[in-house]
Image 1 (cartoon, rainbow, N blue to C red):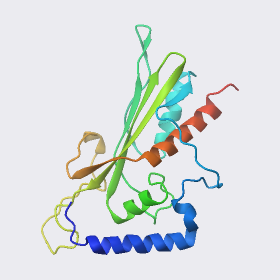
Image 2 (image 1 turned 180 degrees about the vertical axis):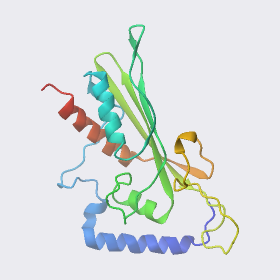
Image 3 (image 1 turned 180 degrees about the horizontal axis):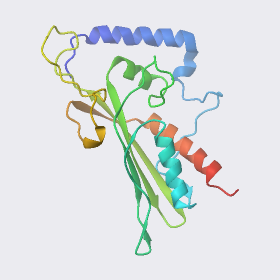
Length: 210
């Protein structure tokens, strides 16, 4: 990754951390919930009871739709008396910044600051695996950093390539695994945990005994 202003960006990061820390307190960077109670880590994959398979897939899809646009989705099916695996993949989504508090794809603290100072995108892949008397919901959220063609503050005047999703094109024609111009950063575990907690709550409220 070529950067001609690494020190400048580091200074901005420190200043933003100090400002947000003074306004919001240490809670912004803590692992506790808004109510002050510690967040309990949810297992990934998450085990949910074997309710109606369509309802389970709908709840997972509805939750993902709050963060990303769905790219492909395969429902759980019965083939030769065997349940197949359901799965969902999403389009890459440029991360929400500190100036977009309504965006849910960037979690509090480092992830949102990182998305503010750098061009970061995320996308999700979810598997819903039947296991007889339950389902395993496996959520993976991947992060990528834009690899700029030229230093950020260079005076280059030629046409610069863009790799974000702001271009006016049909995203359905782009393969989800295309990563040209992007550097993999691994997984976003904090967003995975948020999605899993919400899926667990959704299924408990909507798919459980009435």
